Length: 111
Image 1 (cartoon, helix red, strand yellow):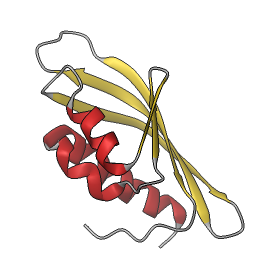
Image 2 (image 1 turned 45 degrees about the horizontal axis):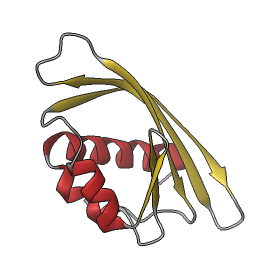
Image 3 (image 1 turned 90 degrees about the vertical axis):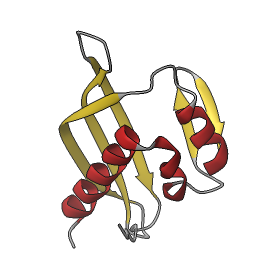
């Protein structure tokens, strides 16, 4: 599977899960994973899931505009850059977002 296909499969799975059941994202993070959101750093799978599930909105829908990826490092890592819009439940206007996912070795994705 090429890097673009891996990135697209991951992004599709991540945001579908985020939109439907944020608590289920824990399996995609490790103890060394770091989430930086609005200047606050959160480390570890359990802490990241706690942060994501405590966000002040219950319903949301991501619309992905771009998925860009590139190889990174000698072990086959991949950097995935995502941008798009986020529609919150009950809100008229969507918010723009961007997110970066670093994989330090080629991810093995099982959905």
